[in-house]
Length: 159
Ligand code: FES
Image (cartoon, rainbow, N blue to C red; front, side):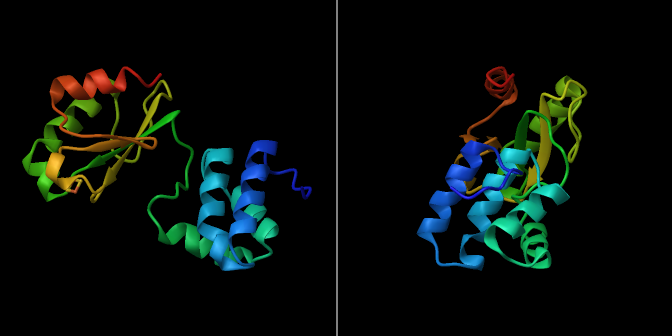
């Protein structure tokens, strides 16, 4: 295993696996950014630099890819990240009510983190669950068919 002290040993092991799967260069960039995001919590400048060094890519290439896609975070988040879909299907099915609950109960405004650092809220354009909305992701977990009661029950599982 190569020596890249910016990454945790676990992250470095995952990066090694990614490097084996993809040809050298940009092909491994997006999965490597996911690993860095999990390892650092968000893609702060040190994380982008570490990915650039690890993949031997220009920092500008890494930064431009990281800022292009909405699934990469560029500021510190709470322990759990909620991505609430507010696109048409979910909006019609009640996403606005859920947004109000998140704001009222947890102090969550879109793009912000709750005062207790438990949750951050991002608004998503669509998370691929249009037929069973309203829907949200909490970290990597998809929750569908939400209503005022269910959203609170779901969030109780994330401390
Ligand atoms: S519109 Fe909400 S998941 Fe697609």
